[in-house]
Structure formats: structure tokens, C-alpha cells
Amino acid sequence: MAETTPNHTQTVSEWAAHDSSGNITPYTFKRRENGVNDVSIEILYCVICQTDIHYVKNEWGITRYPVVPGHEIVGVVSKVGREVKGFKGGWCYDASEKDGG
Image (cartoon, rainbow, N blue to C red):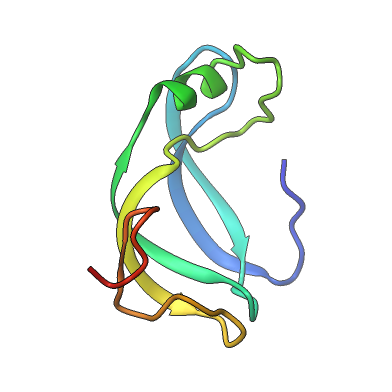
């Protein structure tokens, strides 16, 4: 499980796998505040692909649980750290286009 520090103040609710059964259940955890090099994206859509399924089921033997599947996203940039280059708040993001289109 991820280390929790006093800086972990954001409560987040997601869906996660807790073992190799393939089942995902609600999961609440604390996330750290954004740093100067971080970008937050409000996720609007998420796809579970075959890679996520392999990872959730630990078919490669490298999964660390709990795991939140769904690395293919579309969303809107909601927060940008002051040292970040190439992202602006309000831009749409689809993991390949970062131009606000």
C-alpha cells in the first residue's frame, strides 16, 4: 500500500482490485496535495483495456494491490503546478493531444 504522510489530505474514491480475482470494488484513499511539477486532470471518461485486465488479474506477476485500473482517459486539466510546461487549465486532454483541442 502507498505510504501516507501528513501531506496526504485529499480524500479520493475510486474502484480498485484488491486481489487477482478480477473483481473491483469501491476504494477510498488519501492522496497527497499537488506539487509544483504536478498536473490534475478531471477525468470525464475512462476505458478499461486488455492491459488493465492482465494487470488486475496479476497475469504478469508484477501487480501491487490495491490497483485502480483505467490508464486510458479523456478529461480536462483542472490544476497545473507552477513549474509545469505544456499544460494549461481548462484544456481537454486525451493522453495524446495536449493542445486544448
